[in-house]
Image (cartoon, rainbow, N blue to C red; front, side):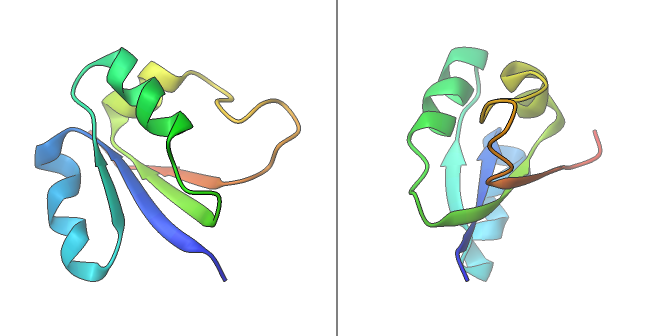
Length: 75
């Protein structure tokens, strides 16, 4: 089983590090896209803040990738 990562604004993701989540802080849209590309290969689930999800668009991993699974936090 792979790891869990969280991507987005510091206020939304920082606390998840306490649970062992790989945290990628990204405040601006370009930083979110860079953060997405930098995720380790063994990440199977990415928790996104609403702003990070908006910055990535509908299919950041490509139309057929299916990995990693993504979940968006409510705003």
